[in-house]
Length: 115
Length: 112
Image 1 (cartoon, rainbow over the protein chains, first blue to last red):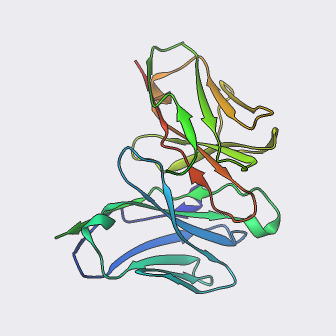
Image 2 (image 1 turned 90 degrees about the horizontal axis):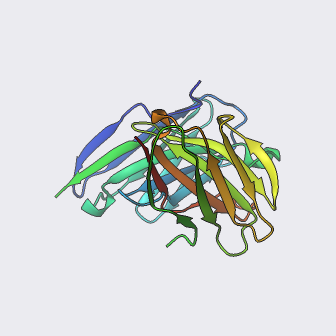
């Protein structure tokens, strides 16, 4: 049972345009959500996070939106740059519930930003 | 550089063999996590240790075991290896109070 789903394996956008990566989750106990970026031959690196008490968090060109009623979150990258080309993983945890901090990951979306 | 060190980076072995993967967490991090990434799969949580004690267990096979030592480094032992165990194995560490994990570069295991 996949608790975190990224239904788009890949996404291609033009440089300067907006990239929107989507993620759905099924476990209502999740209260903390993160996005990780992964380049080939490297480990995932933290990008941005959002707590379930918020519906938006912004950090420079990256914004994460959370819709708890729909159990859906999205990552917006504006403007997209070629260096953003990577695999993006959505992750969730039931951190504030006092449980383990372990993250449950989606399968990832490969973003390609074309010059 | 995340500060998490994993060795070896690459490992090729045969079916039936046993290997040990090693992880040194970031300085000060008490939690260590192990994840497996197989082809076209996301990161599958295997196990978490906190300050030497097992804290959470995921989809870890009985042929696999892990431990965290007093100096906080961790080892993942994989035995009776099968072809399907070929994967990237990531170690991550955390302070335990931010929800963020910091990943190493991974150990790529190939079982022939």
